[in-house]
Amino acid sequence: MTRNAARPSLLAPALLLALAGTAAAQSAKEQVIRAIDARQSRDADIAHQIWTFAEVGYQETRSSALLQQELKEAGFKVTSGVAGIPTAFIAEYGSGKPVIAMYAEFDALPGLSQDATPERKPIADGQPGHACGHNLLGTASTAAAIAVKDWLASSKRPGTIRLYGTPAEEGGSGKVYMVRAGLFKDVDAVLAWHPGDANNASPETNLANVSAKFRFHGVSAHAAAAPDKGRSALDAVEAMDHMVNLMREHVPQETRIHYVITNGGKAPNVVPDFAEVYYYARHPDPRVLKEIWDRIVKAAEGAALGTGTTVEHEIVGGTYAILPNETLARVMDANMRKLGGIHYTPQEQAFAEQLRKTLDHPARPLGSQAEIQPFAPGFTSASTDAGDISWNVPMAEISTATWVPGTPAHSWQAVAADGMSIGAKGMNLAAKVLATSAIDLFTTPATLQAARAELEKKRGPDFTYTPLLGDRQPALDYRS
Image (cartoon, rainbow, N blue to C red; front, side):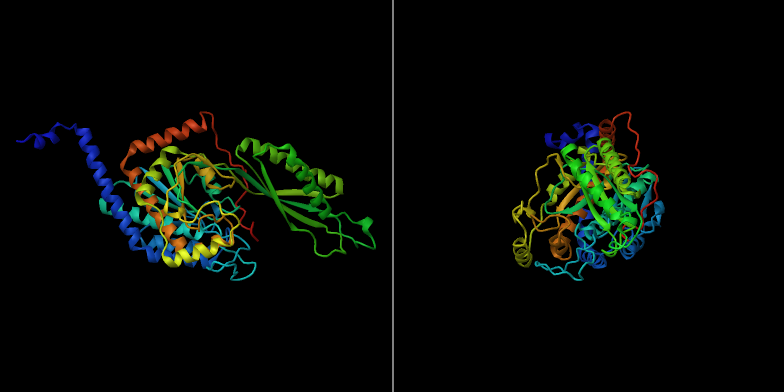
């Protein structure tokens, strides 16, 4: 026997098992990548249908039904209408541990209708549009879950793959109600993604958020003949807004406060007896946010007192900041780097160059869609209801370049890319990263243990989850 031939017998059994496991995991990853590529055209069609539906939060009837049907046909058990939300669902395959989860968003944003063209061209003025790419988000997560399910079935491996259909991310806090209902309590890890203008798996945090509609009630009167008889609800709204704007000087600098008057009366010659203003407040620390929010409520009460009106407020949403999990983020980053970035065809390059002319000083250069951004902790001033998941279950989220580099979220330029092949390419990459990362978690229990330990350390021994939206029921009419 030669020396080289004898060498394998000297390896420890544990190392042999580890090497075998690595080879099996790589084979599994190749399987899910092939499966996702094979259904690329189908996924692009599904994403485009949802892009066309452009349904706002809690009204995503067709979008939710389309994804549910796709999952049922793939062999998932689908439960609809969970957590008291008609468009929420859970799709599940397998049994036992570990339970690896993903989620699908599918709501659009009001007033951002746009055709898939590089110049401003609303399809229907004032109508919704997918300016945050949730048509892509829900579809990629579905494709990844199906690919992992097929691998579990063919390998006869124990474990559960679960996809949560999560409505109304844009201000409706759909995931918070699902977390509050205990639907994530047995999950070992959540792998997530979001459309963007770059490929990035870095662990990021963001801003906690509370939102509410303040409704003022006064007394109507003829604005010219009997103004002294009236008590203007609009005056109360404007008084509240003025006091909150003065407050901006006296809050921590990370705070964000914004509002829109949703009802200011119907006619100038009638003193409005009803007016409504819709507020958001944000801060990285949910405890600080609560203190700021209490002051905003006091401003509303003071405005009512000073104008002779009354006020009540309805909490619409409340979300935690994301608690990043570096253990899971590194798994996602490693897989993204192996897969590589996104490359444009000549037609896509021409589209991108024309669209870039409409952007004001884009921060990211064209061509960066082919790169993977450095792995580094980050912060964004946005908010998401996924934050509540991350305080209860280890979670990591990536972004992929579904938009032309430099494109801001919630813009018509994002809608345009979300509706054509540039968005579909970013969606395909995201599905592959999710699926291959899920393979890693199914095959390496130690990674899940490390992710759980990191979560428990970061949130502290005394942490008790209390939803920022309290015990209110889902605000199903918040976009009405």
